[in-house]
Amino acid sequence: MTLLILLGLVVAAGVPYILWTRMDARKASRAIAVHEDVQSMGDELVPVSIHPEVDLDACIGSSACIRACPEDDILAITDGRARLINPMSCIGHGACMSACPVGAITLVFGTAKRGIELPKLTSTFETSQAGIYIVGELGGMGLIRNAVEQGRQAAAAIAKSGRRGSAGDLDTIVVGGGPAGISAALALIAHGHRTLIVDQDRFGGTITHYPRAKVVMTGSFELAGYGTVRRKTMSKEQLLELWTDIRERTQLDIKEGVRVESIRAERNAWRVSGASWSDHAPNVVLALGRRGAPNELGVPGEDLPKVAYRLIEPDPFAGKHVMIVGGGNAAADCAIALAQAAICASVAISYRKDKLARLRGSVRTELDRCFKTGAIQPLLSTEVKSITEDHVTLKTPEGMKQIRNDNVIIQIGGQPPSALLKTIGIELVEKRGEA
Ligand SMILES: Cc1cc2nc3c(=O)[nH]c(=O)nc-3n(C[C@H](O)[C@H](O)[C@H](O)COP(=O)(O)OP(=O)(O)OC[C@H]3O[C@@H](n4cnc5c(N)ncnc54)[C@H](O)[C@@H]3O)c2cc1C
Ligand code: SF4
Image 1 (cartoon, protein in one colour):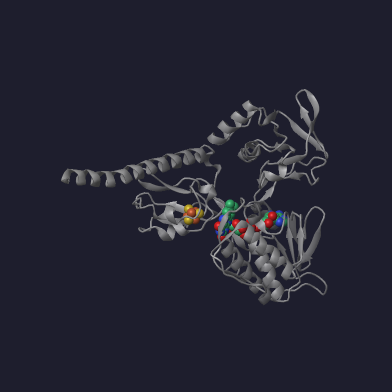
Image 2 (cartoon, protein in one colour; image 1 turned 135 degrees about the vertical axis):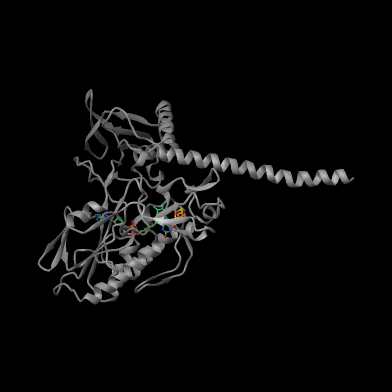
């Protein structure tokens, strides 16, 4: 009887232990795979905003940081220590640092190997160019709540400066319609400023590009003239509904689809210009985020509505002949996502070189598989020459070819926002893993 009880106790304690160690081993091997995959992209990768750095000597492997992180597979325990396995997906919540019981985590900008350039700002977010302010992620700090707060503070400083446009002119141009730009514009309007928001894309910022149903940690934040949003978490869709409501219930003046390409001084004001738009104001708020402006091919037909510069969801491409242009991870990821959805009439990838180099390990494997099964048609050593409603013309080694096409997605890299800042003469500082 006693033996039976003992056996029962051993089984009761042993089974959960075996399951727990197996789960742990599975987690560790997944972490190593993610880490190797990211490492295979080389040293080029630098998290765009503030991110954790783990002091491996101080770390005791408690896993508290991993439990605290609201995103998946960013930190993991390998060899008994916490490591940042996927820095590029870190969005700077900072929950890991607060959770660490031994203070082994510091939040830093850039990495020791590769720095990031950040604008030098005053405490009111003014740059080295008087009248130009930078708010939100472009200043280095991620998160919606920070962006909203910085937008509000910069607006208050602008209002206090007393710089106004002449009668009938704008007082402030806000470049970027994400959380920082929206908040700044609302606060400026509340201060009586004639304000215009200009965005290269759609109103809403990076949030509009989140994956479907993404849970967003927002915390409460206050939008001038609209009210306080008191939600700890929201889905992407709920946030977009909030943006729509703000747009409908406030007097925001928004110009979408205009990429600002230059800002230069002009008689006590700043002239802000895009390809086919230009205006001036004594104050400019730059709320560009850190994702930059996508590069364009510069070919006839690129302005057609069927041309896009990123894939958000495969669904709109059901039944379509889609061509992805580019040879990096982003282009390959996009082609794979469409091929895996198996809803397109065809998926092709056009690249000017004869092979796609510098791909992450997992992307290379999946792309080769899709090439073999025909799920993706490789159009290597080809160059897009023009785009029409139903075709793309490619220059190929065998001459010009017309390919049937309904949608083109161009993924050929982009200009970092610091490029625009440099042309304006805004002073930048390089951060290499500094707190
Ligand atoms: C996948 C993902 C998940 C995230 N999850 C969270 C989360 O849960 N909680 C959280 O708080 N934060 C999260 N973030 C971070 C958050 O989205 C950003 O910190 C926030 O959007 C920054 O706001 P912003 O206004 O500074 O910039 P953005 O939202 O990036 O907006 C910048 C805007 O500027 C426009 N723009 C850029 N260049 C130009 C130009 N030259 N001319 C005209 N317009 C231009 C862009 O089109 C864009 O609309 C997440 C980010 C990502 C990518
Ligand atoms: S900073 Fe945030 S997203 Fe990045 S690892 Fe820490 S908790 Fe996760």
